[in-house]
Image (cartoon, rainbow, N blue to C red; front, top):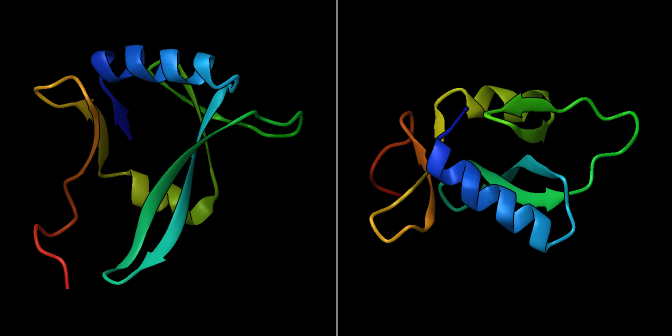
Amino acid sequence: MIITDEAKVLLTEMLKENGQDSLKASLQQGCCGTSLYFTFVNKKTDDQPVVVNGINVLMDGEAVLKTNTVTIKTDDEGKLIVEDSAQSSGCC
């Protein structure tokens, strides 16, 4: 997973505003198969986050595999977007 510097700024602000300290990557089943789903959480004492560009990221083993091709960045309007280079452009 890559988190760009611009996305890091937004994520840091959003985590602080929500009183959270980590980004959690989970797998979610949808109409087009399994995809990543991101939420803000507080890490527990026994959690071992991966630090990506200064952001704590929690994920289980299966999510780790899906994040290998993911970049979290900002678009031209400054909004966060998740880009997956392994995902096809179409759905179903």
